[in-house]
Amino acid sequence: MPVLSTPIAVRVLRLSFAVFGLAALLWIPIRDAAELSLSNYLSYFTIESNILAVIVLLVGAIRDPQSQAWQSIRGAVTLYMVITGIIYAVLLADIDVNLNDAWINSALHRILPLVMLLDWVFFASRHRISEARSLQWLLFPVVYGVYTLIRGSIVDWYPYPFMDPRHQGYLALFIGFVVLAIAMALMALAVNAVGRLGAGLRGRNAPQS
Image 1 (spheres, one colour):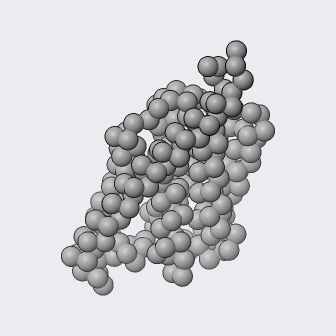
Image 2 (cartoon, rainbow, N blue to C red):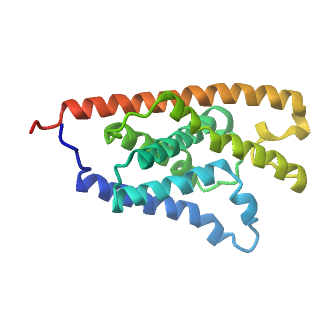
C-alpha cells in the first residue's frame, strides 16, 4: 500500500488554524498585559492544550512528519483538545473562566478542538497505536492535576471550580477526580479508535500501485 501524503490544501488549513489559534491565545495577554497574571493564565488546561494544538498544527503544516512517535504525540494533543471541549461543554459553559471575549471562547473551547479531531480522523496516522499507548496520553492531565493542586494551595487560586478543594473538600474532590479519570480514559480509547477507523477508511480509498 502506498504511503499517502497529506494534501497541500490540508496543510494550508492547518497553518491557517494555527495562526487563528495563536491569535486567540495572545489576544488577552497582549490586551490585558497590565493587569493579567500570566502565571494564572498559563495554568488553565484550556490554554496549555491549545498551545500544544497550535504547535502540532504548525508542525503538521510545515513538516508533516509521519513517524510513529510524532503521530502518537498528535493523538495525545487531539485527546487534550477533546477533553477541553467536552469538559467545557459539560462543566464550564456557564462559568466565568476569564475568556470573556466570545470569539476567543469559541476558538479555544469549540473550534480548535473540533479542528484537531477532524484532522486526526480524516488524515489519521498510518501507524497502529495500541490501547496501552493511548492510555499513556493521560500522563499530561495527571501531571496537570497534581500541579494545579500544589500550586493552588500555595497561591490560593484554582483555575476551575471542580478542582478547588476550598469549597467542596478533598473527599468530594477525590471522587470527582476518579470520575474524571475514568471519563478521560474512555476519551483516550475513543480518540485512538476513531483515528484507527479513519486510517482504515483512508487506506481503502488509497490508489493501488
